Image (cartoon, rainbow, N blue to C red):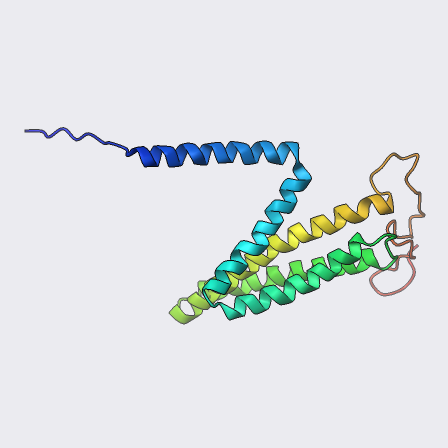
Amino acid sequence: MAVKMHTVVPWDIEVFLLLNLMMYIGLFVWSKVGARSFRMFQMSCVLMIPFLIAVLGHAWVFILLWASYVGCAAYIVWLAFQRPVLETTPKHVYLFFTGAHQGCFSMSIVGLVLLFSGTLPGGDLGARILLLSMYFGVVNRDGGTIAAERMRPALRIGEDKKRSRHVAANTCGICSQTLRDVEGGQSP
């Protein structure tokens, strides 16, 4: 004799799924209508939520890494917000965010190697390093985008060709310094 099984979904799950759908639609509309405010809200959530979880969980290594990175990145972004933009600011912004990106990429490779090394302690450490490097990579990308977008209007990059400045081929379009090749000589 076959027993009929009826699957009943409790109403609270339906309400939860409906609220999730409504929240997703609201966030999507917000990202299209107010892109700048949405990006700032998203960046603040990406920064603060893991930090608060780490404080509650007493994850002191993460808190120390987070505080040192956010302090340095905040200074670089503050430089990008200054008016007028100093000639060296784009160089500092580029060097900081590129260096942080390369560091995150290198640490993710180290984390993957440790994760797949086969030993349990190495795998745990590898997973932690991999997750930290991925987190700081995302924060670094968002911080670099905010700094670059803030400097762009002051440097007149990407505007009408009539209003934008024209520079020689061997001159940096951002800081107006003469470009050199890799060996340190002058460019042609």
